[in-house]
Image 1 (cartoon, helix red, strand yellow):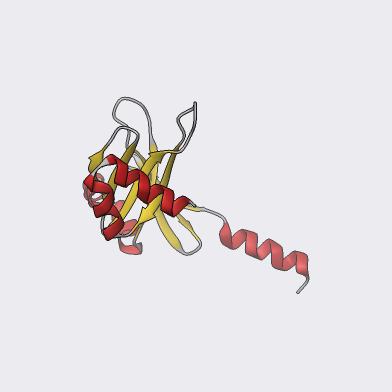
Image 2 (cartoon, one colour):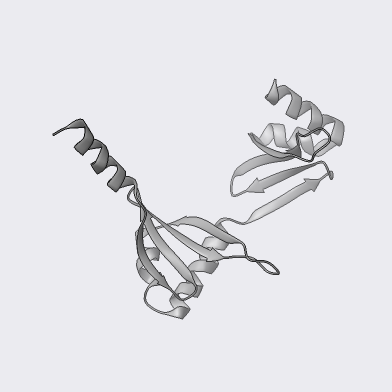
Length: 140
């Protein structure tokens, strides 16, 4: 097999394949994983993409009610809990992971995220100075 042929096969393997496009969501397969895309916006359109199981991908195609239930389950799994909001940074828990989202810009707001462990999150929750200290330690 030629190198060009191998590259074409790899490209085709990585392509997104649309499985379903009904009930207000699109199910795609890429790299043998399934994803659902749907509008999660309230006032403005915000298309989100979440990984789902093969069974969920099949269920979405059955009926509008089944699709709705899968989307609710997916959103519940992705639930983000803001533990503390200092304005310039937030300490966030998503499932069992902790994230600090902070303004890493100068004059222009530039939000960045870093994953932290539970102990680092607990330290950042004490006060803003400790949150900044955790960020500095991780970013240097």
